[in-house]
Image 1: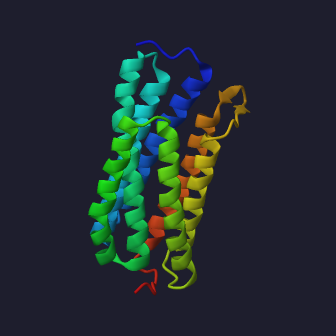
Image 2: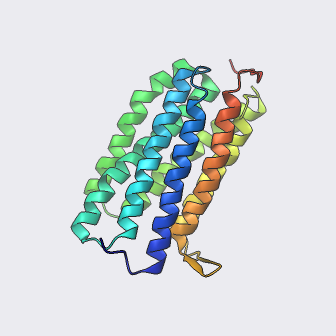
Length: 222
């Protein structure tokens, strides 16, 4: 096993690995509330599991010295995981604002859309730009739903979810920028900073989900 000689690639791999661990911890915390709302917990378990797997694959792709062919093979399941995770996030937002029946109806369509995004990455160029555009549309849709849920029906945790979605959008913007940081001698390029913002987003979103799964929280959701 040979480590990637580029320092920022190594730090990107490290932040990917931390993000994966954070997703697994968040998944465990949410699974503890599965008796409150099994369907919602199942949805978030899949979402966080897919994000954790994508982060592990990203850590390998960035952290190791690999041939172009092997790296390309790793990107394929990674993009599939991300595409499905984004689709499931949209379903989660629909569930919180419009209820479980609407989310169940949307679920197969969003899964098909996730696979459709993956198919586009196989035949097109600028793959990550395609993902950013796909994620932006999904996240903006989710943001509208959560803002509405926070203002009118006062769904528990909706305000936190809106903040988490905003952070995800910020992370996407960072990834497309040339921003870099040096944290006590640890160099981070835009990918590393992207992961740091995503970590904060995962923490906020997990707090929002847990608040929504608190059986003592009142809810005016129809």
